[in-house]
Length: 472
Image (cartoon, rainbow, N blue to C red; front, side, top):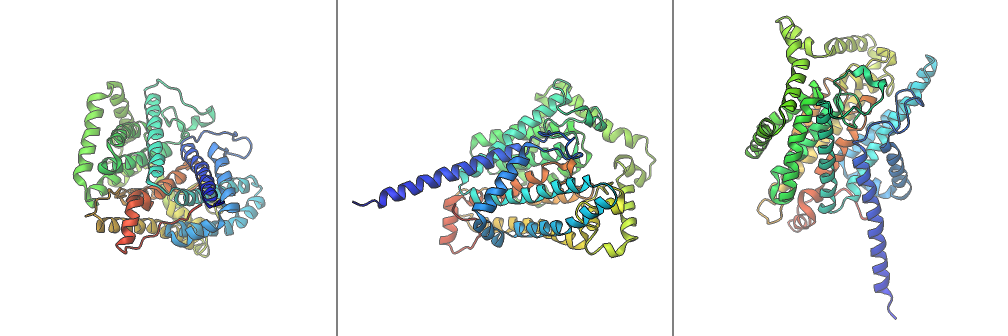
């Protein structure tokens, strides 16, 4: 009797069950990034509360390290952004002992524990990025994850809007009253920076869907429109001036650099018209009040010179930048490798320079800054490569989802890093790095861009592209 058919069928079913479980874990993880309220309270380790995604990151990392080391090795060999971020994480880990020793020396040993949590997040987000690329092998699954990102992002945006209107209470404890009565962020924590930047991510995915209508379908275009309207309105409510700048830079670069200016222009016009004509007057008034509070009033009472105008709305960042530069310059021997991961106590007494580039020079030196910038540039080049391959297949019947928005988004985030550390693992940023890496993994995934048929077509045309993964 021939048992080969039974054996193959059994193995295929086992493969599907295993792939289904991993994809379910990844889907839950991507949704959990939106819930940044503490699961375990801050009283355990200073201000580093544990959140739901922390436990998921631990489970996913343990699974990858114990069962899929070969897949990880193949992935990091072929995926340039992942490889550079891996090297950055290695450097941060190697400098951690300096932070731990110094924390004990100045009688702040709890800082060593806080830094260990930050280091865990860095590795957790990196491994999750690899998992999203390795295990998402079909366009349908990629769409499922991005659909859920847009759906949950829209729900979060609606909650932010309702909080701004006073119809829904804020969700965090009185511990966070330091951020003031107008800090609205749904489940994304109290700091305005994270919800504001998260809305920009939602808008970027919405634009991608809108512009790729033939590939995503009509239903997803409606989801994109709803997400676009909600995210822009919520962005206005959050009051994050840095996020507003990020949004404007993203739109400006998209209009200048992108090849689909007309589609983006129509999208923006439809969103603006919808907010003006279809939303309640109270919402428009809330957005106007937020703008007056954050921008118009400070500028009105500031002196006329440009520096004074900038300082009126920069939340003291110029002073922090100059102080950080001065302290770094006073210790030039620290510039090559810094003072250790999250060890800014030595230079700033624990205060952040609110500038990612200065932070990296202080903590990991110019070596850490170099690795970080190489990671960002690798994302840019990966997007360019996908776009180039897409143009080569432009005459085929295969529908493509070209990640045009990734480069404007990356440019906007790099501008944002001049005024903060949103793309890092500090407490105010919470899960933004995880969200950003999730989008990099999904929107630059060849299977989303070209679909399975498109990748086969590329092989037939002898166009080389790395699919960054292998079978389970």
